[in-house]
Amino acid sequence: MDASGIGRVPEGPVRRMVAAANRHDLEALVSEFAEDYRNTTPVHPARSFTGSAQVRKNWTALFAGLPDLTLTVHDAATGPNGKLWMEWSNRGTRPDGSVQCAAGVAIFTLRDDKIGAAQFYLEPVDHDPGDVNEAVREAVQGAAGGDRP
Image 1 (cartoon, rainbow, N blue to C red):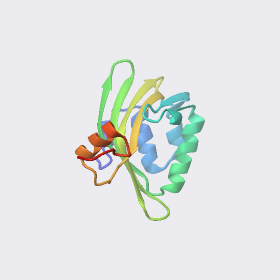
Image 2: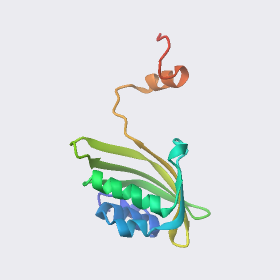
Image 3: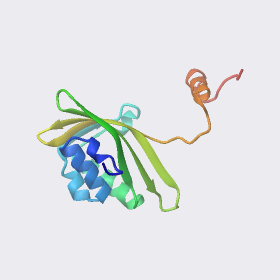
């Protein structure tokens, strides 16, 4: 299996999309999405969108702003009703030299050999030194932190 982990993804539109993304082949990438593709981002509802035109806009900006962008598939599984779950990450260098890394899961709905929809859970990797105790404290007390024990 190559370093991208693409061999973990079954043959089909998601595998072709990942391969196209790693080649920075915008036309091939966009062709894997249905015209009425629906992207739902539950953690950031305002980021949800519909349409392959927005897919094109997003990836055009990503390829331009992160010229060495690469995707890595860590695991993938198929389920009923045309679903494909994929754990993945990406990495790329911004024009200022800083590195952008994100990781998460996408749950794709496939139809007619296209990506018809996705539940999208991809987040920037947080290198903040806070540990699990800090994360739980913030979940309970909010970002202000309240009184610390």
